Image (tube, rainbow, N blue to C red; front, side, top):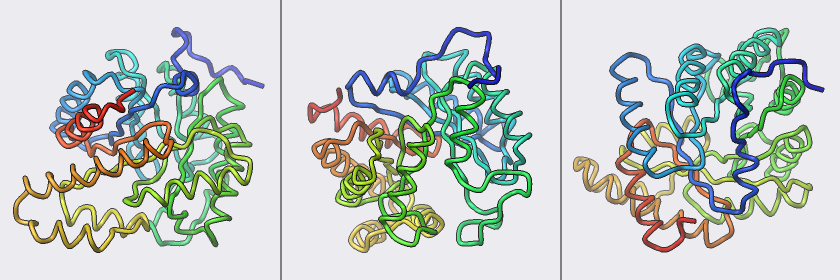
Length: 305
């Protein structure tokens, strides 16, 4: 039962409804910038990608809520000032239940009806032991339940084609995704990966545990070799040797690196869509060039919508 955290603004379009229409979903993810210059870059990328009429855009939530206020403000601005449908991120890290309720209320007041519910990385960073806040939540399915109790939110969750780094097995990871769906999640977005078969296997595993929510694959266009190596290490994702070799051979040529990144991501996108993926979610890193190139390549292949 909803507990009254409802905005007085008009009802927002839910990702659940957009996905139910059957068209392929194309979405873009941004992170809250640390300063005014970064915020200008973010809005420049948002406006450039807005012309592509994506299904939704999402704004991440800093570790332990370190960017909470900026995340809430920017996501609210997107809802109020653009034609885009925003999805706000929310993590359990470092928050009590009362603090989480406060953030959820702020999202509702800002007219945000779509939230991605995440447990988040341990406060010491990926690879460190997970310790929940003594008055907080331990798992993402609990956050899904809280969101569903506090308002009529459309809730997304994370999925892991190569398995969550802390999962004891791929089956256990898929079973937990099914638990999040049973708790009320409407859709999932995956961590980035480079092998289409990993995604297809995840969908098959999840279905065996009764999870039938749309699982949108996350795509990370490679534009910086060292950066993607760092991201892969932090997230536990595989950075394939064949791709590393190609990129390291042209590491000192940014244009060549981006060209390879766009080529590889385009090929992955086409394989995923051919395999039945409901759409694509691009991790933009607050830049639009590579993402727009990949999107254009996919469109030219005749599989935009």
